[in-house]
Length: 121
Image 1 (cartoon, rainbow, N blue to C red):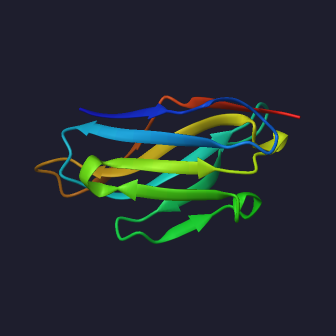
Image 2 (tube, rainbow, N blue to C red):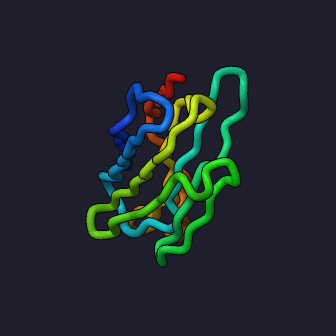
């Protein structure tokens, strides 16, 4: 089994910062892309940022210049540094990873349980 465990969410004032972490554990042979998604009440889940195993990144336009995604491949962990937070960043943030189990030829999508980020104005 594979688990993604997130941490770092919370309540912060507008303009503040938070850092999210997501650690993958279990039967892991390799990890391809990792990323962060978010879902606000009444809205669809959307991609916030993603990073490949080689370190290439992409961001939603709404967070470019404010959020930074990074990963530690040795620890199977992905991070999201969020600066200059705005009330519209309020959402549940989910970690995602494409993971290949031992003896498998394929990568499967795994999700964390979600962590709440609330930005007050």
